[in-house]
Image 1 (cartoon, helix red, strand yellow):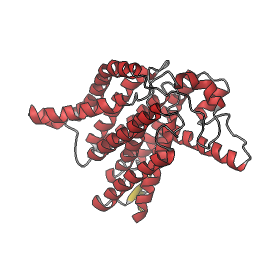
Image 2 (cartoon, helix red, strand yellow):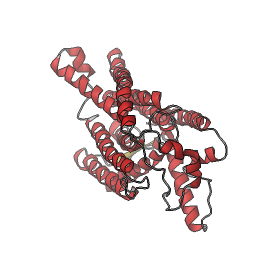
Image 3 (cartoon, rainbow, N blue to C red):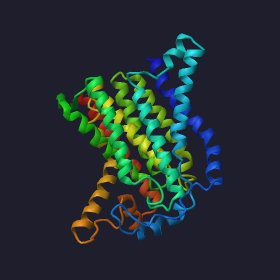
Image 4 (cartoon, rainbow, N blue to C red):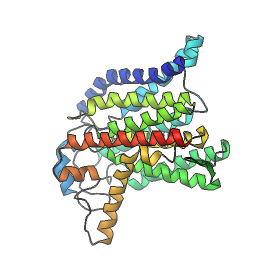
Length: 358
């Protein structure tokens, strides 16, 4: 047990330390090369203008660098490779047991983390060099969703055909075999969770929420005996906290696509691995643990549908909903802190259900 505790917490501490060390170098590069949007976005998802958003964030949009998410995935990648190399080069039973890079638990999450990071990085670069509206800039939402759909389809097929997983866990019931429907469900969940990445809109907001979510899944996977997966999740938490150290108000950089795409895609994989594969209910509790992401996505969907079918009438002053709270007078830090509180409460509820209902 002691070794398992060290194994899951050591990567988290190392990722935090390495992230803190890397940040000054990254920050210097981002500011020196003016890695921010050249103008604030003027077109929303529904094709309409964004006057309220611009009144709240236009200045930061064009003066605070993007790509801060590099800290998260780069420090994580360094940690997992470093421990893997030490286990093989230095030898010894102790170091070998600390290695958490395994084919059955962490290969796929690591692959999705890197894949999402690279696609997001390309999108960020294009967006920074473009006009901020995803026209001359980054990848359009349709293209990003297509990429998410394709990679999630490939991974879902691997789960179904290679690992022979075609059931989902239901609390207090057991496994429910859904057959081939497992594949489209996987793809839909991946796209839905990715859409929640728009929560990266206020200083400190996304970092705090993602740290809470992955902490919850670290607990769940540890309880399932998936020690390597638990270590992987806590490694991400440590890296996210290093990013958050520099992202709290006033933010020195934003997570942007290279961070949010990496984390949301990885979260989908982790949730499914903590489900029937781990004899648990990791997927069922995902909407609970990731409640802030779900609410963020729903607020955008509701707003778009309302404008379309109610002659332009809005439900919220601006969407996503965290910007609505800003628009009605809440200070940004208050919105962030209350999101953190809600995120922690729902994560705890999700963990309780996962532990009791498996």
